[in-house]
Image (cartoon, rainbow, N blue to C red; front, side, top):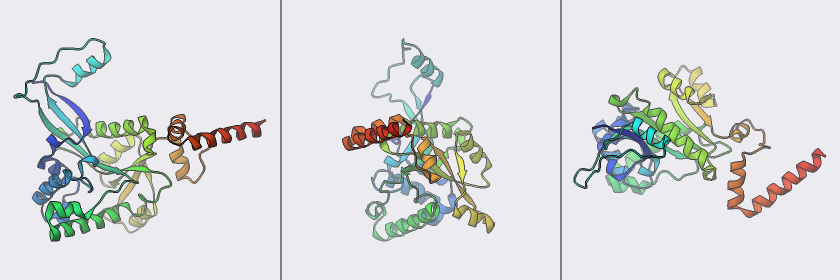
Length: 289
């Protein structure tokens, strides 16, 4: 049966150990150290996905899913480009279309509260939950220090992005990143100014993909120290600015011309901000005269 791919937030019906197996392939040694084994990691991530305040909560996971419902990607593209719709085979309740997760991205905004010990306690119990929580906290601290947390604007940090081996070469990673990019471009009121991620220096294929999508390396103090010490696991931070003011604020220069969409979003939420913007624009006009 023809199938097509969709990118969406993780759905309850897609929460299986397959999610965990795909995620653990990004850094198997790290997940073995955190959970004890890859099997425990896969089932543990599955359990954490059902809860709300942890790194693997479903609200932080975006998936690319293949749906077998009688339509393929070309048919869907044709339907969206024309006013007439192509008939799709009806699916009864007993014949629900099968869904296969092809790729997974774990990410969250800098301003979001991510981890709560109680999620780990609910999933694993007191002792094992505390151990997993502590190890994830240590890994996150090292990964995000110092170039992730200390930015003058809110950004979306991509913690993990992984594609199932059978789906590689199909553009799954690009689809997930573009989905995330367009989400924040279309909703500037969410406050995200850029996308950031860490990539290993030896992973040249991933670096090329990210550069092709618009990411650029941000050489932080951590990067320079690791490179000077010839660290075998040297990682570098890459960033994709979504708005011009993100790059300006990162360089320490004030943004004098914010995007119109952002101004409208801020003004709609805060009437006082609208008055301030009007005064600033009026003052700029007088200075030019």
